[in-house]
Image (tube, rainbow, N blue to C red; front, side, top):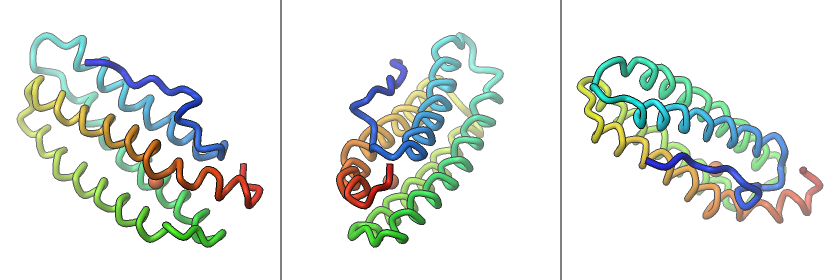
Length: 138
Ligand SMILES: [Fe+2]
């Protein structure tokens, strides 16, 4: 499966948030690389370790993003919080896949993660780009 390429089109214009998004995407790519290179379904520890790390880090990232939204009164902050919560719940649910992983189930999990992040950054986060820029947050 394809890795996720971060480029300027994914930039939300806030350096700290971009760096966090890049780090999350790097963790997803690490899992994609591992699934792509793995022939037998064994040694998936790196996936569960990385997924755990990504989930924890995503939580920290959401906290940081939501704090910025609250500080400046971003109008869609509540909506973002709901979406973040849904993501974490779904990710925890899907991580049960790792109890008896197959290449296919892992690809589905990674496709969900990749699609969610790219879709969320482009569809939701991009909506605050101008808002934060107007408030001098870069
Ligand atoms: Fe977000």
